[in-house]
Image (cartoon, rainbow, N blue to C red; front, side):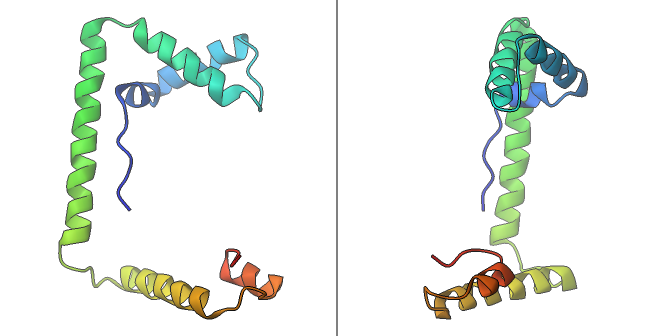
Length: 122
């Protein structure tokens, strides 16, 4: 599955010093378990917009480069030759097995079987 492109704000907020500053500012605004994600997002956006235009442009270029690298890796994984490492072969066999099971099991399958399979069939 192709990954989602990251924005310059997302790249900036992953820097450890920025994470700590965002967390502190969000806590000062009363962030809790329920509202923490929203408040941290607002704080990060405000802090990023307060940076100089040059710094924001640097993070935009860094995000663009990360997205380009991710796209190249995705193309290589999907269009390139198949990997024959034992781990990759096992991963393929397991995913194939799950898709076969999902199509053959009736809708009223037992909960224990659904738990074993790892997902609900309904």
